[in-house]
Image (cartoon, rainbow, N blue to C red; front, side, top):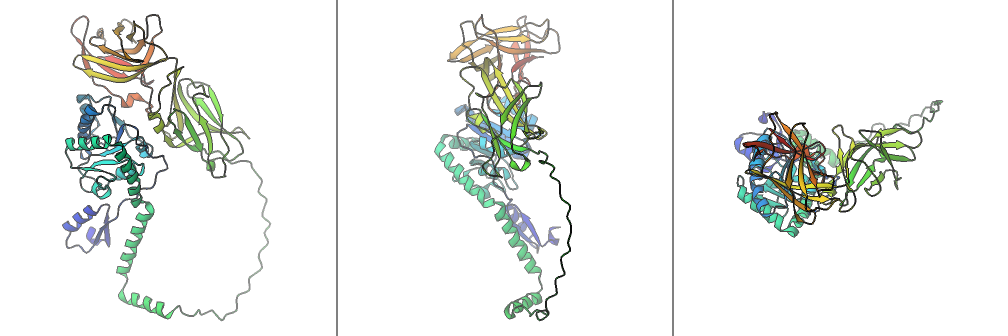
Length: 540
């Protein structure tokens, strides 16, 4: 098939060289032109967040198992760092088992597929590629565009042709988790060097701008066209250029008379008012946990607009004016501040409403940038509020909100041989001498449980469970977790609200742990997060 082509183009130079080596007699022009990587519209990484990001199909060739093994070595030295792996594929269950085996459940997260990685790379300070083989490496360029240095295996064919080792990333021998861990730690420990590499990475990505790649294709096509043009035609063209253009045959003819224009009485078009709304816009969070909305002017027709937040389960609404842009093409904007808006806990859909006729349309999401939430903190005083903007499955902008008088935030949950250790921070209340962790059963006839709580520092607590009530002959028993700050105080729900993850149930997973049962024997306990991002235990 290749032999019947004028040219065959690969996306890497090494791949083209391999083809030429395997097809030494082919007359086809075999060359390479890289993939184009458009400049993203999202903000760039600031390099502050202790997060490594990898993305791609969960396939054996991607060697995410090696990445997880390497990250276990990183966590042993730098426990504050986290790893997120985006994508789906047949390796997911095997990777989940490896995470459980290495007890990395609070450090490595399988994020599942994401509609666009453009908003996820800026959250990272390092990107990781551990493949045994890459055709090119689009994820490398996407990360570089976001100012994120890439630690990658020097595998065939792409990484080594994109990354300059030590300048915009690091190259590591393939299939060596120890070398990969060392490269990650080197990048983690050198914060200034990491930022310099991030700056260089953005410059590197410009080599793959669509305009430059298009020019390479145009040159190739011109060369191929020239090669197929007969020699006689080329000689004729050169002669015509030397002699000049032939005299026009009609140069001496008088110009034709222009017929009179027909007079047409065009019907007047009645003004039918503003066009139908088609609002679309972006959202960006800041380090205070607030959100800014920008609605494209191209989908709006009218003079005044309001952003309406409507609670999905109920009739509650909040209205925020959209500010008029400075120019016709600038977006309409609104700032959503937790100090100004009182949003009850739940999910809120966002609409744009036109003042002239009251027309209201749901706001379609473009970019939803949540990076600010990774450096924001839960309020240390007053009620506990937290907002997470997100794109719904059908493409609209929504806001998940949490609002509680007090809250116990889980910071770590470690499952060991015969024990479960829970660590966290208490907000909106103070720990007393009789503080305890409570498990409230959802099933009548099944015992609740209580475990002593230890205050380890200001607002920090820890509880260790070594035994649990059995499931009382039932197939499974569920307990919801609460923290009782003191004997005379109301229990506080235990969960995870902070950062940018909308549904913890999908990402924060834990293995079964065998604990002793008070009546003898043992019980298998699996911690999990509910649909409200609260912690619960299940006994089988």
